[in-house]
Image (cartoon, rainbow, N blue to C red; front, side):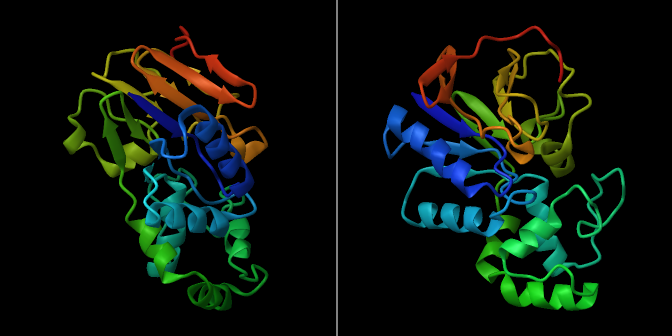
Amino acid sequence: MRLYVIGDVHGHLDQLKAAHDRIFRDGGSDALIAHVGDLIDRGPDSRGVVDYLITGQAQGRPWIVTRGNHDRFLPQYLLQPDWVDPGLSSRLHWTLHSGLGAPETLRSYGVDTALPPERMLAEAKRAVPASHVTYLASLPLYFLHPLALVVHAGIRPGVDLQDQAEEDLVWIRQGFLDNPQDHGTLVVHGHTAIRTATHYGNRLNVDGGAAYGRPLCAVVIEDGAVHLLTDGGRVPLQPETLPCE
């Protein structure tokens, strides 16, 4: 039994395709691949990423895509334009926050981000396919596999999976990253960018920082073993003793 997992994509279609190619070479074109979310923002081709994943799943590829906090921004902007994500400490709107990546995402759909806010919103509503809005808004919050629990940010320790709050599943850091307890299964997550995929024993962070110019991580999980997939093949990931990033 194998499970492949890919980290936060952030609009990097070329890196996503390259990560899939590494997986296909290791496990074949029908490999089960889970993605931890954050498909959009910051990178140059958010539209292409969403198109690619929608098309692959429609063709029957066994791909799972969980919802990241960034995947909430675009659909909420179009459906509830004044919405501000409660997980943002800045309390700034997606389009006004300099670091979230709204301009890159909107430009990937052909939207002129120099327009006044009202006109930019109207253009975005025309430019973003309804299928993309529905897709991003309906992504599952987690994927439970016999080998691991795949989720974007993590879980609230000690809370049953069905009782987990969405805000924790897509935003949590404090209380999860620094918690060494056994969660009952390996929790595979992204959300907190580090230098490369890292195994901490009870959790595995696969966000290697593609949003910041580092490679998009792809890992393979098997019973008792985790490997990072590189162009040169598998690299074993042994549990580290650091309690948090």
